[in-house]
Length: 207
Image 1 (cartoon, rainbow, N blue to C red):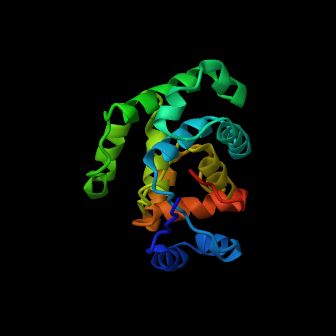
Image 2: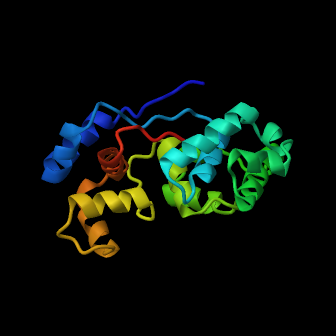
């Protein structure tokens, strides 16, 4: 599968480094990594469902088991019995989410052909009509499939931990203050989020 990287990365890094000294330090200490898109919407969304409410390490373990079990296509996932997916580490609810996602793709109920031209908010609204795809999963899709540059997934636990660690002067869980601070990162909040994640774990997240 082809992997693409965002062409805007150097511009974003320069802006963030100038706008925020703490972010500049995080960037300087981070190994050279960038977000990547593998281009397949179904795989990205299936991985997002896999990663919901569990650690990156746990999600990677479950995903590897799924890869050993089957191809990652809508038809293949539909054909997997519930117990087979449960044995990979999916909860009953996540099995239902995967099957429903696969059905949406197999039956042509989602059309991604126009999404490259749509606003982030419109894509989120469309994605969250699929069972199991909430705000966070839709934001992961924007970042890791469409490589949108200005996503700020504030419900993400890892992002919250990183902000609390590196910006201790802001009150814990004061998301209003966090959003206000993040305004200086616009229009590159996806990139800022990436470096905050990497400050906790240098292993790159992939969806």
